[in-house]
Image 1 (cartoon, rainbow, N blue to C red):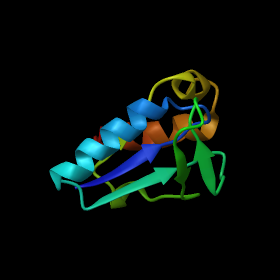
Image 2 (image 1 turned 60 degrees about the horizontal axis):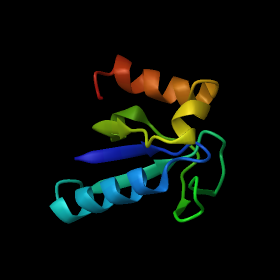
Image 3 (image 1 turned 90 degrees about the vertical axis):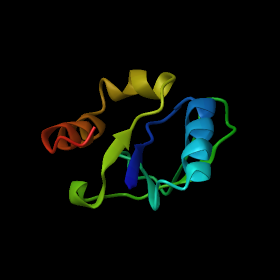
Image 4 (image 1 turned 180 degrees about the horizontal axis):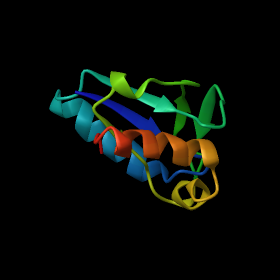
Length: 96
């Protein structure tokens, strides 16, 4: 399986790092990419623990699911049009 992680500024570090660690250890995902709708090369979590390199664009057909870490990032998502559009693409493709 392939997963796209939506990284909005100030995402909750522990929700991303713990979840990604479990998925990686499971061996079930062949690909995990981190997408920044702000088109940044990297993002930093809410508590400055996780520093993640990101991609600036994606094709929904290349992924099986999307994951949105919580924290302030989830709150910022409510007003981030590119981030919301990414989530809508996955919902429309029934990949959530």
